[in-house]
Length: 94
Image 1 (cartoon, rainbow, N blue to C red):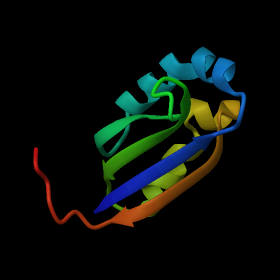
Image 2: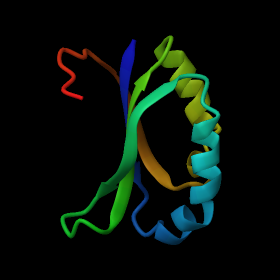
Image 3: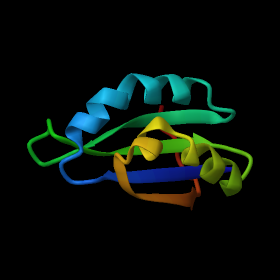
């Protein structure tokens, strides 16, 4: 199944994010599911990071919820809000 995980940062958490970004990347590298696309969300200035977005192929939503609870960004309080939604992939132009 495919999922979108949409994470919004706590306002003013840029320093915390920077401190934990390498641990976050390492954690994602060990994910027990396939991360198809991922990257930071940006403000309108196209530079300021304000969240993260993932397109994931996983067994079920519970797998993502459990994994997300141990993400270094989640544990450090970078993300204010996380939504995990089922995604129906109808087209892939890669």
